Length: 211
Image (cartoon, rainbow, N blue to C red):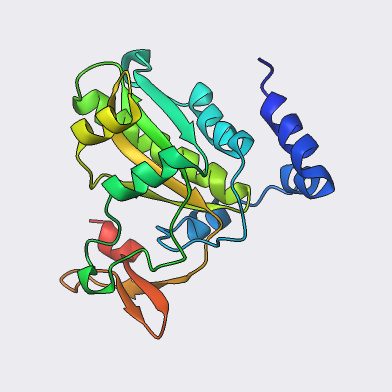
């Protein structure tokens, strides 16, 4: 498959808007700033399978421990399977009083990330690289997502008849919430919080990271 096949298909599906999105690539700093953990999504926007496949396609270019490439992926758009996933995962565990996602803002598209071998330190490194890279691709396409690890793998495996062990779930959609980064220093609370319908995420500055 040609490297730009999915980009061409994306442009075909979304017309001039798709071509514009493909050509106008934001800088890495912009992508990183927009790549937040979104827990609320617009219901008037349906994520297409071609968009999920474009996200998965970045894995064909990523580094992999010992080049083993153990990760496998299942793309799921709105439907019965997405409803099953939503019933088995938990979002926003740090804010239990809000019962996130709020009604009417639930994600409806997902990428299930599995491994062909038992989880180990190399697989976990690959997993982190993969998840972050796929989310950056999502942001590039005007979408957003959330990495979910709060689920029972055996239940998810059975519910979706997965041939491989699930390590993570990526929720994907058009974000419907405002998230702001706020500076934090060593020793201060790094817990994210909501205030006046805005989601705040404390982040350590460069001075705190360097030693």
